[in-house]
Length: 382
Image 1 (cartoon, rainbow, N blue to C red):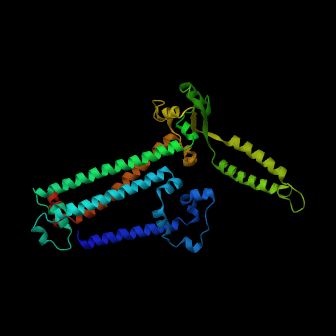
Image 2: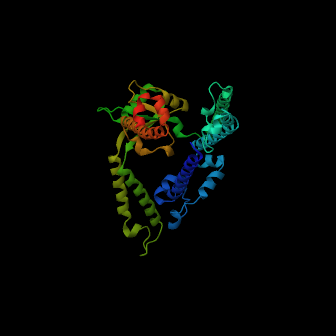
Image 3: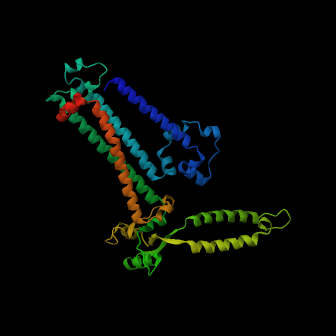
């Protein structure tokens, strides 16, 4: 590799980073992505209006705000998971900084002076003189590479221990300082077997009443709502509008008319809607089971309920704000198929990516391929 190639590769990577940063700066301003980037602000109704021109102009202000954000701010806004992710980035920066210093101070000088005569014959723009190939076989300076590896490894272990202890302390403070959460006393049960004799609700109650009689408290089934849930949300919004209009006086001098005499019809609609919502709910094979103590919930979540791997799968219940409720209605067996499909797609992408990269790298080192695979000599010579 020469310096020109290194500078070209660096320029391409910097250009890609700037382009991706600009793309993120534009996408975060689009109204369709508000739920993705500003979910917490949307919940607190603290969003400001963005002009049309400003929506499509990249702005670097978010980079400065992200750099100036303290750990306490991240903990307040994003929670403990966001702090752990930021600490992982800090660990990576520290680790690569230490490795860079060690390599520049110890490894590169040894590689450059590995052969006193060979590096003088190399072109000035070649970087081969800084690789371990420039060190002659049996050289006494190879201890420098081993020392560098030991220093980098010990540094990585020390930094990992510091980060792990820091995250552990934050987690203990969060658990001790936070009030009791109902999710801490609950577990998520998936893969509930279907029975023609009883419903999912009765099956869950019989199972946990029998095996966890002293600690079982209650349970809540997850229902397949779909379109009905959307209608329910719209009806709640309508009820709020109706309640506001009932406190006002109609233009004709009648109070509590609800859009000029629609009060009775609105109540009838609400009653019929509630009946429809109750009748249309369908139980899914998922439930939240509540226990009397947190220890009992933890034991039940970590225990193997049955020998069948797809039935009565238990796990600690997540926080309600962290649940994507539509996914809870997906059958557990289908989740495994999706995981296998995703894993297969990732492996396929890696293979498709590695083959052309390996081929391109091989073309730049034909002499090494000829030495490693002598049967390719005739092919490479043509």
